[in-house]
Length: 112
Length: 112
Image (cartoon, rainbow over all chains, first blue to last red; front, side, top):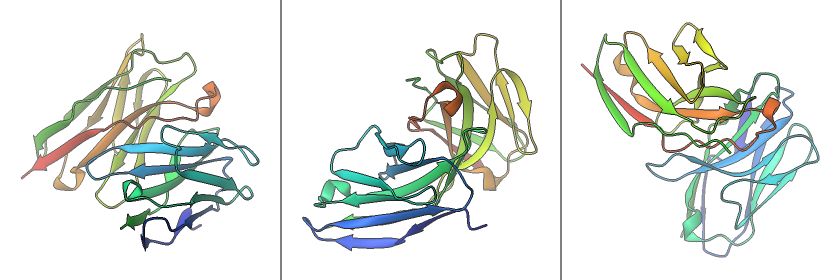
């Protein structure tokens, strides 16, 4: 099992550009999450999807959109990137039975 | 939404037992308490989870008093490789809480 995979690992954007971060899990989990982590800070929840077909806002949703494409995949889109979105983005998934979240390796995004 | 409070940082020496306490005064009846460990440049990793009393696994113990308003993660005989940030979370799908709040965590430094 690969667990949670994220692409790309690194990305540099210019202000105003758009991009989509991809996340996939092979653990048959219902719930998936997108977090951002700024230097020296804890993780902040951007969006989550409790189950296939549903998405909800987390703590910091402004400037982002998400798509739960199917049970395996959950993508995060930045429509018009801003320097304030420079961060490390983590995707996670969890089973409702065990409540344990499994995290991907992260995507380091820099917006110039 | 249950918010947690942890010490910002702790120092310890190799071979000592480390106890990190987390306060969660407004924990809901069905919420679980989960602890994660995060190394630099990696996603958080699950350590232990509990609902009440004491839980022990191969790496840690979790103590939860009867009122469940706090919890203590105990790491026996720490080594240099335990230097990391430790996060306490409350919530869980069984209580309908998918919005996990990570907070800033506790930065543990283990000294030789």
